Image (tube, rainbow, N blue to C red; front, side):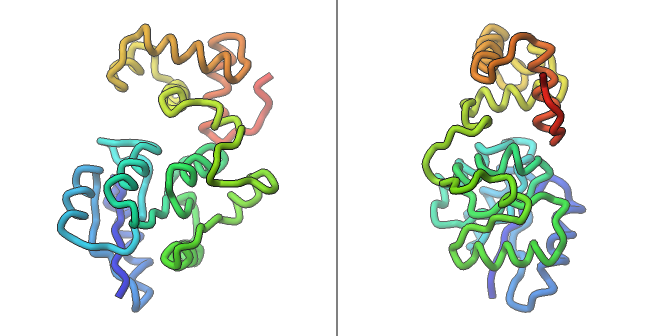
Length: 216
């Protein structure tokens, strides 16, 4: 019997995923976690064969969650199931150590396919992700896509800008000084060849909302 861990901060989603997994007689969910800390505590007590991970766990968000889990449990395969748009996060998730990435709008059959693929130690790339990856993309070494231009911290700042957070709010949430946030903002403008705050805010919103209209 294959044991799975489901980490998501919404109980309804965790229970829904477990119901889907129960349709397979050879799979079971043995760990449910609503936070990163709860996940760690559960993994110390219970062996699982695969982690189904949301990128927003409240106490630790984004790609840092993947990297922390990979550091502690390097042999544990991770399948990301997230509401974040694939064109923004999928490539970075793979480079952080995930073996699969699915949007939460995925149908049940694709979820099971993804789980079985990752359990075989193979990378699962959804049809949507496959369409947006440049031809011949290598998911292991660094590539120069738009989101790869930014550091992890810069990417987090851009995400918070997209949420309408002020520099002061970003500083408080990230535990940084306003001056440091301003430095990150300047670097992002330079790396993305944007000229002002208005362009940056629009770019951030369109990037994280999945809007494909031009930022010009």
